[in-house]
Amino acid sequence: MPYTSLIKKLKQWFISSELITPEEYNDYIKNSEIEFIDDNNCVVVVNSTLAKSWLQNIDKEIGAGFKKIIGHPVCIDLILKKEFEDKKILETIKKDNGVFSKFSFENYISGESNKKAITAARGMIEAPGRKWNPLFIYGKSGLGKTHLLGAIYNSMIKKYPGILVRYITSFDFRKEVVESINESYKEIEKIKSDFAKLQVLLIDDIQFLANSNKTNEIFFSVFNTLIENNAQIVMTSDKIPEKLNGFENRLISRFAQGLRVKLDSLDIITKQKIISFKSTVANIKLTESAIKYIANSHINDVRWIEGVINTISFNFLNNKKEILDYDDIYEILKDDVYISGGELTAQKIKDIVANKYGVTTKHLESNSRIRTVSFPRHLSMYLIYKLLKMNQSEIGVIFGSRDHSSVTHAINKVEKALKTDKSLKGLVDKLKKQIIS
Image (cartoon, rainbow, N blue to C red; front, side, top):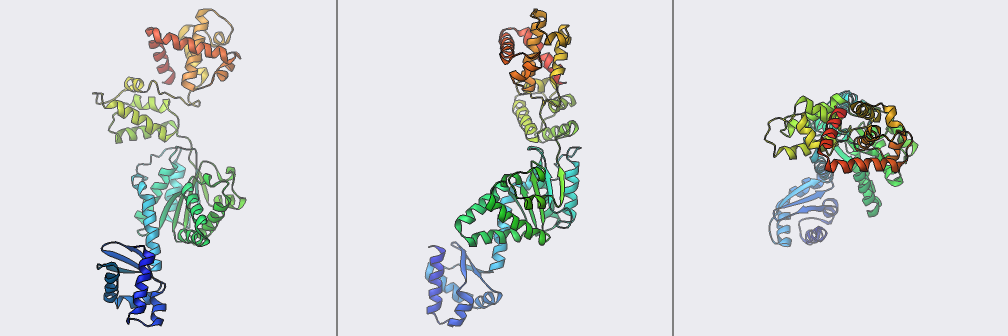
């Protein structure tokens, strides 16, 4: 039986009984609602403390009415409307933030690239709503912004028991707003009211609210209310506020009114710390040279590092060695190596190959077709293509402005030779190690 039908029948039973007067019905029962019922329990929400107190005095009679209507007794829980709404908010928060149980400052690896953001987050936690409000954390994807929000969330609920903290992505915020708009004006106001009760709002990837006029209007209202209530707001973004497109200036100025801190690309030392920590969690032992190889071989992205550790972990299942060294990791990752341009240059590759074959880089850039020059040129093009992921046109420019078809021919020639020439394959592997180390 739907709740609306059930409460209607219950109210009709009250009216027909001699328990209450019409005035008491209007004051205590008319606006009451059933919010939940199962085989054993029923939650009835009432508008006032007086109504709750009055109904508690006739709880046995109410129980008899329920039994008559639904056919079995239930335990009745009378809750004030405000208490019920707060409970609903709390349950929403618990549901939204359950994923954060694994995030903390203790397992957030610190280094030069993120120490300012960590310091700002910890400082804000000591005085939420009064220090650095809003806190705006920005940086490229994969640098740990969501982890930092999770660490803030867990620190908040530990330090301030009962505090209302909510994490939400901008995508989910937009979804909630759109659904409320489709429902009614009342639902829109309810969204605002629910957010206004929060003491801390953590909103991830604010840039995805761009070009959403109605959503931005509601967020603007929520933002202002929370700031006025001295509630703390923490936002993350891939860009500094001034470079966010698709927002009104009034929102941009509010994003920038607190403290802005940047998460920089991971420096080499921080990457090594993360690799060491992630491998330990995965029960993988790596030598120092293996850790350095991974740190130098993969881009500045925590997610990418996690993917590499997963690859190593998968291969480690069939490896009987207790500790993996440089050669083991090289073998596992040899087809998955990616060196970011900032850590390795095309010039370095040309220098190493030229030195191996006893020629100069000028020879490699020349038009000479002598094999002692043309083959190391082809090999240099191949290695730059594989390790730096440059396209053929870009490679052609740094080899004397050759066209992309010449570069494609060179790469294909080396790839074909590698399939049949084992000594060449061994040489290329050694060159890769030398280039990456």
